[in-house]
Image: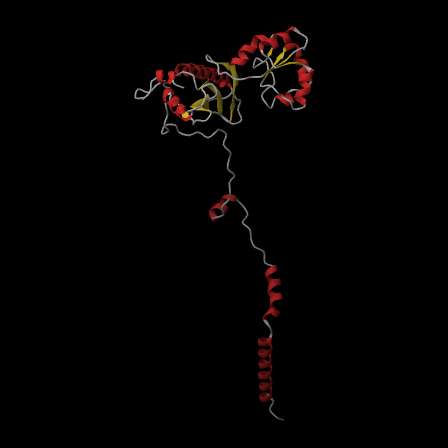
Length: 309
């Protein structure tokens, strides 16, 4: 019987060599589906568990920034401030060639206050009123004595239903509105607050624009001015270009004293504080005031500012 071991050895070598040739001849994409299937079964692990432990491991979590509850304030120590006479001198240099009665001085008072707190709003008659062409509307019975007296005092509109219809049509041809007490119920029934409220023209007992006799308060309304806090700032026309420094001083002093009284009234609800007072004009820049009338080293005198406008 012949020995079969050499034959078996040769057959095994042939089978191994054939297998190597088949494996080398297979294209690479052939194995790709198998690797993709294997890769799809593996899931990426996400950090979970205690957030403090994640921070220790290096996982950074974003925090929501809290919004500001107060208006942004700037440090006034390093800013240049001016006396009243120096500020008027520079502003008049910007207003060269303008009419003394057409250009106005404005004062802006910046407050330290909360954004969502109550706001300051009031009316003031200055010692030296700023002349303005104010159109006044008086809501009262058209055939009454109040209507006749209001027209003599300078009202441009007097009546009830005619005024209500014009306002609803969008024809608001007045700057101030006074309501006689007998017409207040009709005005509320006509829902005038929807149209006049957003414009700041709705009569109110608190502002003194709902009165028994409108003609008696029209003089103060024409010579007075209304101010209101907006975004932590109160602005008001404080004088005209032809005013003397002494007249401006009296007006600014009266305005600041009125603001202090308004702040004291609100002190129980919210704390407000005046941090900056800026004087400007119609075309001129804003100059911060330091609270003095004239600087000792000033190159101009109040008399020179009084004679030339």
